[in-house]
Every structure is written in structure tokens, then in C-alpha cells.
Length: 149
Image (cartoon, rainbow, N blue to C red; front, top):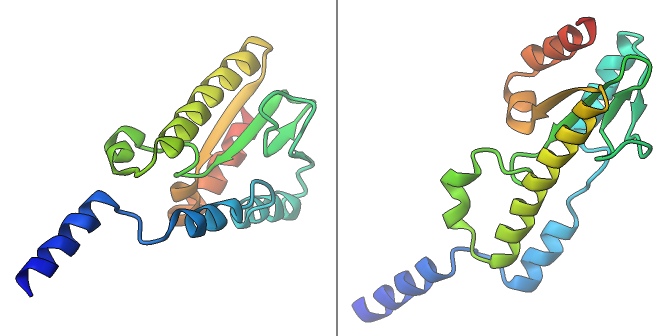
């Protein structure tokens, strides 16, 4: 009995994911990139405030979630996982080189997008998923303050 438990513990530390590769791929491919619940909440908030905006503006690099072309301001609503919030702390827990490369590339792309937009005179606000989920009122007030500046 003890040998089998140790064997299971050893296997579980090597493969930290409880799903097969196929199932994990299926789960992750179902994650939406546009019109997420968080985005919809922000869109609804802005509409209630009668603030006009463009959603998923493909004319701009990075395809900002929310754009105010006349004010040259954009808002990105970043997922904690996909955009790597506090990434160095949990990077070692990833079980696949694929995810490390994917998130590294996303973070580099975000940095590049910020640089290019700023150089073109755009103001940028990035809102993290965890802030919008746990500190919604504060995050929404932050959007209003960003637009007033």
C-alpha cells in the first residue's frame, strides 16, 4: 500500500495537471478572447454612463478591448493567466513549455503594443482581471478618472 501511494505522489508531482493533454487543450481552446463576462460588464457600465466607445478596435495595434479614438485613449482588460499577472511567481508551476512560450510571447506583445501606442500619442489603461473581479467599483471609477484626464 505504501509503495503505491508513494508512486502516485511521485507521478502527481511530475504531472501537476489533473487533465489529459487533450482535455486541457479542449478546455483552453474554449476560453473566449472577445466579449468575455468582464468585458461585457465594463461595456454595460460605459453604456449606462452614456459614454461612447469602440469595442475590439481592429484598426489599432493590439486590438484594444475599448477605444476612444477622439480622445486617443484605449483600455485593455487583461486576463490574469493569459497576460501573466505576477508571472514570475507561478511560471515554474506550468507543466508545458507550450504555456511558458505562449505567456512569455503575450507579455512581450503587450509591452510592444504599449510602446507603439504611446509613441503614437495614445493613453493606455490596462485593467487586470482580478482587480475587476474583486474591486469592481474601484476599477470602474478608475476608468472614469482615466477618461477625465
